[in-house]
Length: 413
Image 1 (cartoon, rainbow, N blue to C red):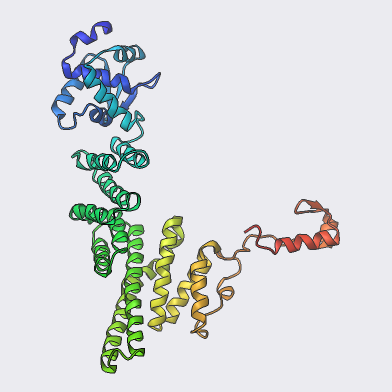
Image 2 (image 1 turned 180 degrees about the vertical axis):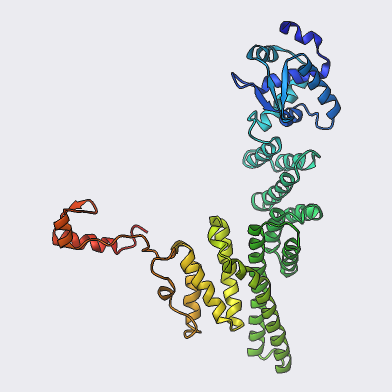
């Protein structure tokens, strides 16, 4: 019966039969239907594809599990599949697409295509890389999140690898309407807009603001976008304030105009203190930051640094102090550097409003770099209990002092 399977199959079923044989190996007779559909280039021919699958199911060649994977009934049938022959040109196309996405059933076809596009950056011409990305983006079956990532990666490639900033921005603009609610897309687009002139910087700000109004945004993405907005708005406003002061010092502006502009800027500092500032601070008050991953922590700390600057300008010293207290006691000391430097700089102009760094860090807190260290026993205790101190039993006085000195250094931290 199985030796004559081929004779019973339609043309489409033969193609599916042969392709399945290229996707199963040894005793592993299972693979993913979506990947099979892709390598056969039948994503737009769902009826033909389903009919071909049904033929194989009825002949007890394969069975479908959960509508997502196929399983060949036996290794004997799999061997027949591999020995089958189809048109060489057709077989070449199927094999080429299979090589592109790989046969690993744990990897989605379109993620595999994205990986292939990414890996081609080093070895392929710019036009070939662009075509790979656009092929993935243009396929109607590609998931929206994969498309958004492909657009971002294409634009990044053009800007970073090909050195064509304008072309990369045009790619972002081409897909902006479709993906301006995707945090991945917006964060990348805004980052590159920020590299441009002031009009592009203003567009970056508006892009982030729009993304923050999207329903269902995750807390981590919201915090990331808020911190981006804080950095962008404070940077532009801080530069404008410095330019105003320089103009006044050089006599390029009348006092009345200076005072009016200064008041407008003061209002703007108050505005960004309220939003996004207090929204970022709410994540501090709710102890959200300590549970974030490393990259998200670093982005948040950058945003908090700018928020502290705004607090100083608004004379909100108590709020800035709470930021210092939270970071220095709830995050490990290796996350302190940015705000530690900020505190040191602030104390030069506002010494009476803030504690010194060491005074903020509470003994035994997460931020205490010596938290969890055990105090070395005295020399008499070590001798009496015959304890080992750093691997040395009953230390002599010199060795004991040396061990204590070593414990007091930063070498282990």
